[in-house]
Image 1 (cartoon, rainbow, N blue to C red):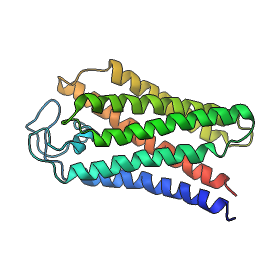
Image 2 (tube, helix red, strand yellow):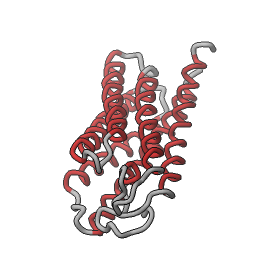
Image 3 (cartoon, one colour):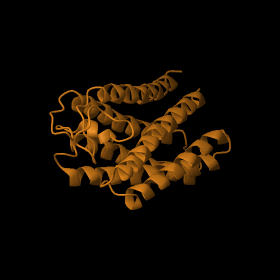
Image 4 (tube, rainbow, N blue to C red):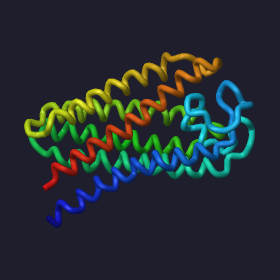
Length: 226
């Protein structure tokens, strides 16, 4: 029991971190001054027209200071990166045999740690201060997250005693990630309101899908620990 308790606690903390991200970013939305990528004159935060990263700008898109939402977003996204790193390390420990599954899980962990690190990098590089670095971290985060999810999906499919519904969750999430990468690379530009809405909506879907996926997997993993 002494060995399983810390591992259970890790997954409990991961679940709490997922909820914390949703709550803190929702609160930050209430304090965002205004402006979108296509219209700097709007007031407040528009759920379908403002990116999550707009919350982290030190200066909002309407040129006003953003002293409340920006620190909230920094804390929320940095925390989410730490949560993903912790999940990646803890989840892989469930798969120690056979060697192929262990190797795939370790590779998934490396990709997950890289993704979490990139999410932290996004928090440290607000889009209005260093847009190039910000975008590099964005692409790196979701590319690495996709690789990690695909590897974990294969591991779960191969695991004979692990409920296959968890493999289905990662399989569906991996498909969403691949579609989102397509949107990032080939989707509409941000020069029109329609393009902004499509990109923002896609981002909202993938971010909340990420939270739900990690939440479900953490609860499932916790239940597997005796």
